[in-house]
Length: 133
Image 1 (cartoon, one colour):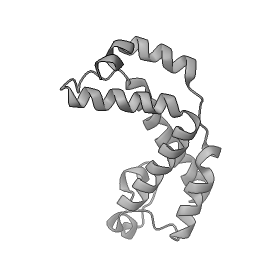
Image 2 (image 1 turned 60 degrees about the horizontal axis):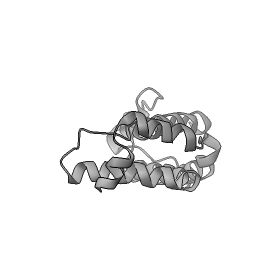
Image 3 (image 1 turned 120 degrees about the vertical axis):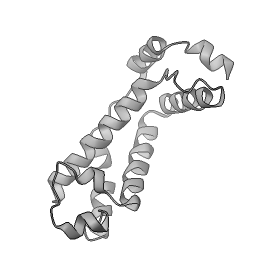
C-alpha cells in the first residue's frame, strides 16, 4: 500500500501516468450493451414514480433511473473501461482503496479517473437517450 503512494505521491504524478496510458472510450464501446438492455426491458429503466408521471425528458432522466438500470449501465461502463485500460483502472482503484483504508480518503490522487468515468457515464447515457427515446 505504501509503495503505491510512493509511486503516485500526488495527483500530478497520477495525471502524468494517465496521459501516457489512457485509451479513450466512445459511445460505440457501450452502445450495444446499453441499448440491448433498454430494449430488453421495454424501455422501463426509470423509477416507477418518474415513469408514471409521464414527463420523461433528457434533463433529468439520469437522476431517475431504476436501481437495476443504474447498476447495469455502470457495470457495463466499468467492464468496457477495464477492457481498454486494465492497468490504469486497477491502479486508480487500488489508490482509492488504499486511501480509504489508511484514512486518507480525501487524498484522491486518482481524481482524474473518477472525473473521466463520471463524465463518460453521463455522456453515454445522454447518447443512449437520444437514440432510444
